[in-house]
Image 1: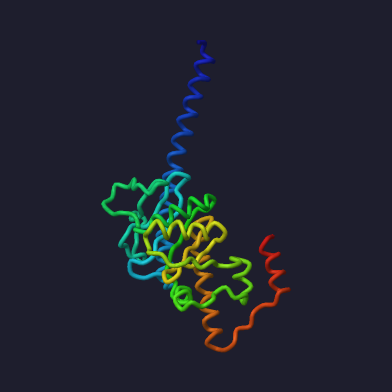
Image 2: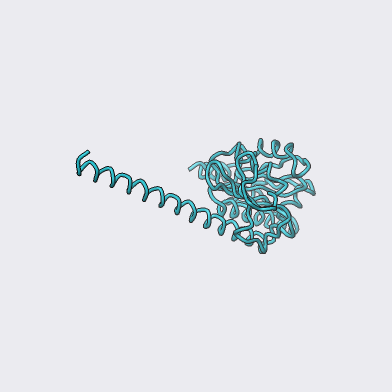
Length: 238
């Protein structure tokens, strides 16, 4: 091997090393950022009153094989970035922590399975939205244009015991065709392209429920006509 060949080989090895080191740093920085974002959204959801105490659970994809999820029995208003548990696609914990993932992990795993393109999930207990399902009232009346363009129809998942695989499979069937579902007598689930997108959908869902509730208190609800709905659905497809 002459000098030029040796030099080329040396440069190639240096480049490989640099690329590898950069990749490791980028991955580490990415996880730190995602942990901070997840903690921020947990606190936002708590301050907004979308969950309280140990209620609710949130998660996001670190990559196609790993998921970052809230631990069980944790207060979302005071959660730290280091508190989240890393699990694989089967729910096995890979964190060196004594804490366990949320008891509703099956709900998250099944949702990622049926919606492989999403990156994050928020499961909360918004008061008004959940109250509609408890009272057996129809939330899906065509009255708010923004809700129609954002969600279309929000399916109501029949009641099943929380934390069970049966609920996870049932919710998964409804989530295949929607970004949001309401769990009867339980809460709601929203999905998104990132944790903020999933959270904003949850905010919008509860805000719409508050508007509808207020309208019912004030008087008769006026629904949009068929022509309005047809135009809104066209906008939703664009």
